[in-house]
Image (cartoon, rainbow, N blue to C red; front, top):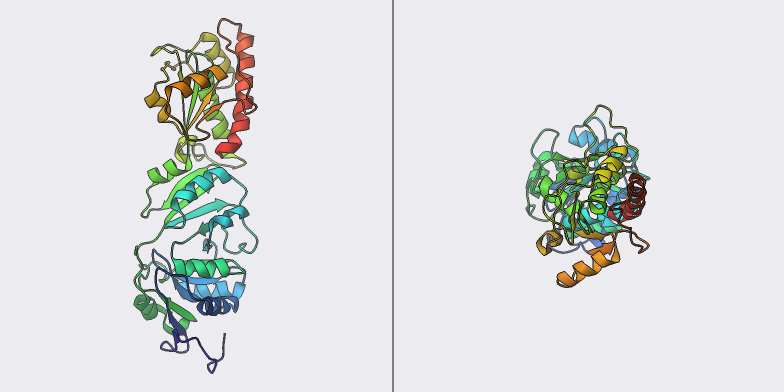
Length: 387
């Protein structure tokens, strides 16, 4: 920290001696001099109280054991494990290597903002704040704080500015009354816009669970993260029902990843992540059962197609899906002709290489088995786009 005789920028004062108190507008980035002052304090292993759009937080350098010890002592907690990494942009997600497309959809709608993600993985410099191989990450929507975090050459963790078990501070006066000169800097940006803590969501292999409720509801988070996948063939009794059923199985396997769930029931299904699978046919009737060979082929995969009832691919149904996969080019052309111009990537062939998947109707059980294997191969190729 600077010595007591150091010169400070005009927006800093010594009213909380020996701490510094600074003021910054809530809707503007922090001036360069103030950013450098905040980062200098954090770099030196001190604790600063900084504003977010939710509540005020205590901030420290994540890769400095001394800083984390100070933060825990102020907070009244025993360990830094579970503290949340605060970053200036979604580029921080590159430090994690799972479900990147899912996370991109989720954060596109909710970051910057009042959402904390608990992700599988431990990025470099965050070893002490991770817990059981999971690390919390948030990109706050406060311009002044964002500008500080974007300029930080080291990871910064924050926790709500309160003593453990007490309500978080929503303005600078509350922070000052709680901590006084125990903190090296208080950045005053007026009352927090939201005034309550962020929603905390654990998302990763086998998990999509809200750990702490906030402004964002679980149903909204699922809608943002997942996809409604539709599969279309001719009569909706062979290929597309198998594709629908196999797609859910592929998603379940990919979402589970390498997790070790422990007791039965602890792995969250695709629906918990917001995924759904459905199917229809361009010339389908309503309520026809799946072909017997299709039911048998799916049973050999450990899947149940016995309750399937066919559906026509009406424009209303097709538009309710996020992605539509056609089994042949003729199905794709049929939907293209019956729908208004669609967004890019909405209508595609199931085969990523653009080949048709032939209809096994009237064929042997082996024909259905071969068709199912082809469909599964195509789904595996598409799953990287979904996750």
